[in-house]
Image (cartoon, rainbow, N blue to C red; front, side, top):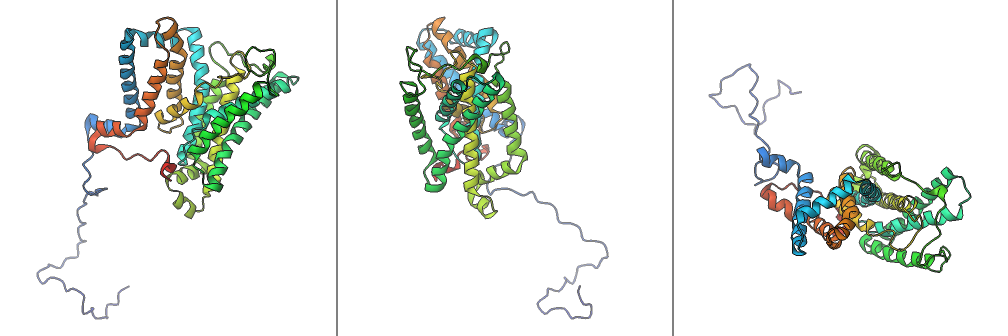
Length: 401
């Protein structure tokens, strides 16, 4: 409180002599709009404003359109009508029973490996070891499925799936431990672990302890019928599981303490450490979850697709397609679902291009590679939106570390 008997300070400014005295409250100063950044352009309105606000969706869509446009040029160069080729591709993938089953069978592991890349992205890690983690899960399920073939059907499936999840988590945790203890970059370690997984599994199924000598090619023993997951019509067993897990991961990231910690470390690991969040712990958790999801993808790829045995090429390019899916979804777990459906349809329809039209199926690989290139570069957003490009959070903050 101010003492009314205390004389005013010498340096206090005296009121203006012509200012009229009034008991009315002073008028509030006019509100001045706050500009977030000096020299920033005013926010756009209309259609451009809508596109700017939804860049996370618009940019991937434009990337896909550009990829298909370039693919059309390549198809035309082979002497075929690109419109008819794309029509046959998606007609087979969605409008035939066998094609739809193949699409959904491909979609199941693709959602899971997409999540396996998306979760580490939230922590600022770039996991490109989904291929090796998927292979580790697949060989684990093959081993348990045959070694414990006397177990009853439901229990055998559960044990095989659990072992696959643990194998995938273990394989990814190696990269996490190297990162947290020795500072080894996860991109380098996961690439090397992919190659190590290929070498170990090749030995196991090619004359090793898991090989089936009765096969004309290197392969493991087939899992018994009790462990085989036959589809419900065109719906594979793993699809509902993958969809539920995508929703669960999105909920975990947005609604739980763990999700907050993961994203805080990804945004600023120094601020997270100052707030008491362990970077080492979150790194290990994120990579273990990632590997577990990829291992689960390997289990489904083994248990629900004939010949129900691990053989060379079972993983295909699923692990690497997960990178495309995660970036196409901009790291959004729910966005991996439509992205996986698109990639799954293209993979399932690729043989149609070859057998019915004579188009080389590698055009699908080119389409996916171009899509990955386009969606991973900020050039598209800058080209479309010019000065109004929203500053996106860096997907993999450790790239420059």
